[in-house]
Image (cartoon, rainbow, N blue to C red; front, side):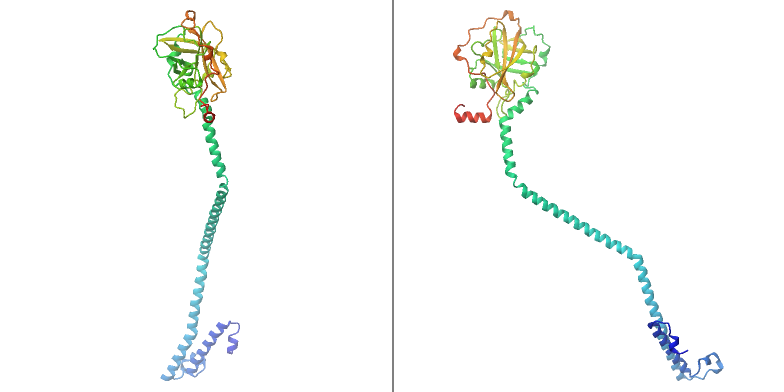
Length: 370
């Protein structure tokens, strides 16, 4: 078999390695100078001197280096490749997962940055748009403040009507027999147990609006007019006026004292302490009239009666609410006749009113009516 036949069916690298091995083998055989079959028969082996041995040894080493060196080198490369493939199969998935996680994290961070940027952009856009509404907001606040300043008495009066307007403690009066007259102190007082009202009565004030308002800042005021100037214990009308509302800046403890008069009904009891005597009155009815209808107070009567006056609706001075009551104790049969009344020229144009609102005060000052 020649060399070409022996290398058939091999790749280029294998062919080169086999050819080198055959050349080395050939040199070994030539070193012996005999047919390869001679090695099988020991008797036929030629006598080899030292020089021939060196040639043989050199040829063998050359054969070893070219054949086995190439073989083990290739085996090492094949081993490295196999280990590399095995490592890639083992760790390739982990590496792929790590890369995928890193990519997802980067995409998520990018998404967060985009969201933050979008929110910042939207916030800036809204802020720019909101600047157009700032004047409207400021204007609305100013208008709201003006409304509250102008109409605070409406709001507060409706609250005060149900939250102890008089601030007093009169629970002990609810059990008093109305037919029993009790000795009391000399201070003139109006007491309405149902409304928890205990308030001083100011006597002697003039019946003009300014004088009555000044008097009502210290309690409730006796509103004496021609035909209705009686005092407790006298036949005729004893009229008392009080505020139902007032402005928050008004320094008075009595600006809501009559805010609850609407709650009084027939047979509710009202007490008046006058000259150390307690007079008891029983409610007989109510009436709403125009402020200038002072004639409603001068009705003809042969009994001692009481009329409470305040403004209505709450927080305004549009109308006047009149609450009528008759004396039940002491015995009205023993009431004295009313002293001579006031002259007709002292009859006021209208009944007392609540404090004017800020706009009304400004208008009165502007027109010289303050």
